[in-house]
Image (cartoon, rainbow, N blue to C red; front, side, top):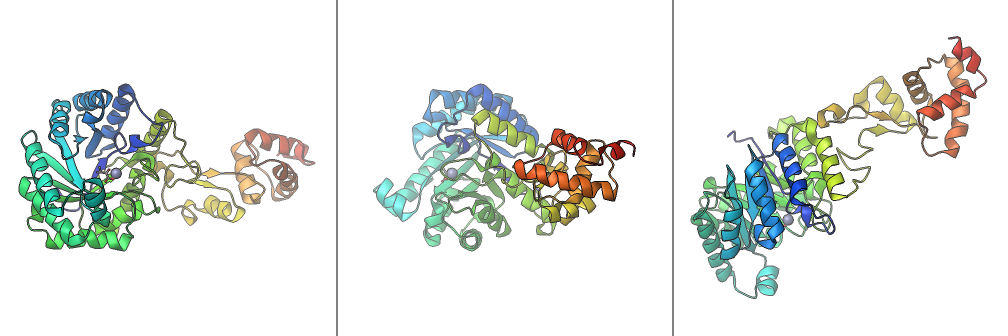
Length: 391
Ligand code: KIV
Ligand code: ZN
């Protein structure tokens, strides 16, 4: 594998599905998993098998149908969790067990009421036990974002000694600044003995809106896997959005960090996940929101009609959106009106456009958005309608 390849670990079906009220059944999960496999993700985290019989069944069903990606199941550092995950993953072509434990002072003192040394022992035992079932074991240091770097390095060394192939460094609470998260990854790259035997993975939550920025800083500083979800769904403010990190790397080729994602499938997958989970995607959502390629102010519309690149940094087709939209509102100018009128069959001269535009403003002040049938009505009720017909 090239050293510049960033593995995409999709956790829509595990961390993403933790959104309250968004439970998916096995059939829905299998449909999404098939699409994720076709999208080109490297790892599909299919669920947390010990958590419920339904989740076990979903992980098992996904393991049977996924052809290319590694299929992963989450566990705590608990023997029974690991055993159950290994059973759910037994049909996977490439199975991975994802085990781990909280490592911040807050988790050690309040959640586990134990000591740092005891956490190291549990981490070692969990990875070792997982290795007795599968070769590929990922270890997560939960709340690594708030874990001091020196101790985190010891945790990572312990997991590597036990055989971990991937070290997940979650910013579980979405607390880190990008510079801080990047520095954490750099510190681990430079200070963990045996780090060349494992890859570092970014798992960033979005509580401060920094998940994408933190994941990108992570890979710039040496991580080689990003954990993310479609539409950024997940606990609280969500996870890193898959479509965002993939497009950041694609649109900044000088970073020389690639993924294997077929980006033209991004919009379709976003719609599939949103419809299946019943979670509406905000219109201004980067890459996949309804307004991501829509232009409504006169100045922008004039620019985009002359050359799309004046106000767009990506080709909508690259993410599966058929074309940029010129939205007509009371803020739109003549160029946009002429463009949309032409699309519905009217080629207007400059003088005709002046006349129709005055009528358009009158209409647009009454309505939020002008659609194609409104354009017909605006033209038909203009003084110059007969003249336009004879054009
Ligand atoms: O956010 C987190 O720390 C997690 C781990 C369980 C990987 O989701
Ligand atoms: Zn998480």
